[in-house]
Length: 231
View: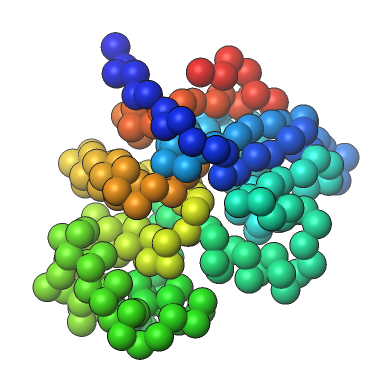
């Protein structure tokens, strides 16, 4: 039996209403609505092709809906021009990918520092934040290492630190344990739970894994582009 986690009682940081997305003649999302509060973890589940990654791309500002609207921290993403959308993504959203996506020519510390540089943080605050996060993910002694020198689990820890570096209000995770063995996957899930509890971003987690979904307060199940059996 899955342990029930009570969701925090705070205002929604993300609200999506009646989202639709078409690729050619195929409707991939059909009237999807959701809301996520600060500090809340939401699992998006469903079979391959159900629209999970498309939905994640829309709420993350990577793609635009064909219908509906998205409100992130009181900003309408669907109404922003390209430059404003890119700026909002840099400032308000962090993303963790299945395959880490660390920059191979940058050190561990430089990878984590990059989002802070993009939002214009000063040198001293950047250095302090990087040191803090690497210590929190258990990699304080690996700051000068290159990604190729790390294990998969260590690379994903760096990726999580990077995603949280600029203190986003929304953290997106697309199958963050899908490229890890079970032990490393469990460690990454516990880290996501700890850091989101501590820092307070909303987390939207795309997963096929019941174990991954178990760290979330709620689940939304997608099938054929629609939400079925919300819980």
